[in-house]
Length: 310
Image 1 (tube, rainbow, N blue to C red):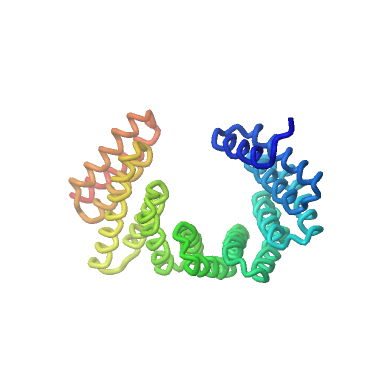
Image 2: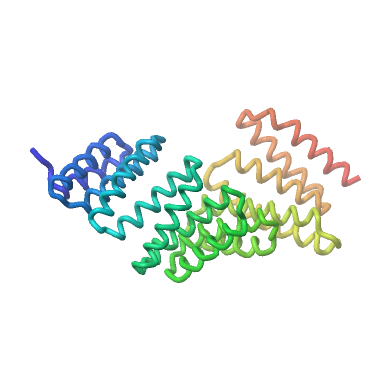
């Protein structure tokens, strides 16, 4: 008995949720074959593209590239420009992952061009972001910043909070690489605020950590006691929020790392008792997780904090 398209799509969705990738592949292959038999080039290209991305997810990049090539040829033959744009973007992302950056850029640039022609702002934003990441990989920070900035503008226009948060993070990271620290802080702080709104506490902890580290580094190089203390206070604020969220997730390793960083910030502020308390909390967690190889480093930091007190 041949399953209908709707049934196969439901089968694929359910199997994907269960992590049954073999069943997903079988369903997508059947959908591709049915589309071929019906001479539905648009559906064939889409299903083959989905199949390709699943293969890539499973670490089979060569198979994925072959499937994407076939899907792209089918989409072009049928004149399906929107599908072609998406496939070129996906192809560019897979090529980037395999390290073929020149080919990736070519595909992504074509994907952007088609998206512009079709007035597809969402697609344009996606592929601009991918171009930024590809130029990041090539250490071409000025070009990457330009692409990330454009992708941020698109996300703002579409009022896509999650997309905007991710792209602000990318832009902030690239600005950091370029040494534009204060500009990076603005974008990373906005990204953190958006993840806070979205309730994505896992990603929020990541950026709070990064922000705390940046402020701590600024405190180390700042001139003037007042400015220096201000940076360390900012650092502690981000670490504390991250610590509170981490405790709700029961992530002792991240919690231990945060307590160490808080210990260093407290020590820099001359708050030795709080520094020692933070360091001792880190030690307890490392012992709990049997990560005793890190204990000598923490003990050394404790001695430095005590020496600073004296």
